[in-house]
Length: 334
Image 1 (cartoon, one colour):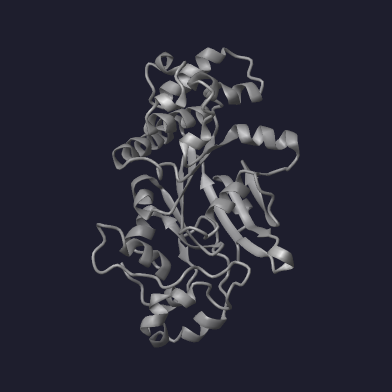
Image 2 (image 1 turned 90 degrees about the horizontal axis):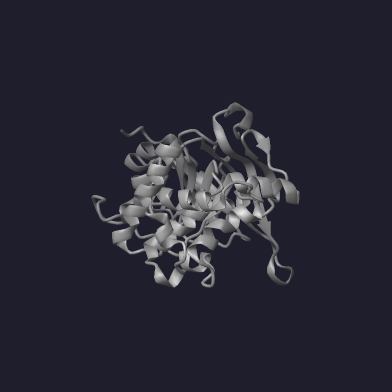
């Protein structure tokens, strides 16, 4: 049973029963990229949305931003349902800003840093001192003194500096939440830590909330307050970062953690690819790749039949849980 968003007054951004379908090719069956997701992000909180490529996390993020209209369910911000009129979406996107993965693709090569950061102000008809606002955003993003960067072009900056310009472009509108899609995936390892530290500082100093979309559980460990693990359109495990990453309950989460360099034991190599979202298998949608089922552990726990035939309910938002038949019956650990 899903949890009513009304029971989560602390939620800044909330989704309930969110579904996103895409039409099939040449009249084929539609693909459900997001399948009944409940998710919340609290004010001043960083939530990591984690999953492998193709699991639906970017589509979910786009639906939360209002860039994709859901097929079903709802998105709420500050307790109010998201409206899909042009005026409402424009106001919403001032409060919720997107930070994309590739700063080179996010920045117009013909625009100076000043113009790139000022663009949002101009779109929203800002009436204050534009130069002061741009300088303040660049400074908060760690580009100091900001005036030194005003007339530079993207090709004159390092990868880390370009990502800071993108972040400054989001900060200039003083949003309450940012959605960062793989914010450090295109950066060198030496720069990744600096950008993650910046996001943490923005949370601590500005109270800025963030939904960080990533395939990297190691990144979630370093930055997140809460973690939601996604597989084939659904959240399969969620909780605080300590709960999920020190005591993972779902076999998918366990497999993802096992390949981190600091993880003890042998890595779990999952067979095959995630199923086609237009042909979701019966039962647990992970069962065809599940190491627990393959090893016989699910059989010994008496749930192998359920794994193959019985679907699981949508995991409620804002609670510790795992959508897994085996996790539900096995002895508690930790």
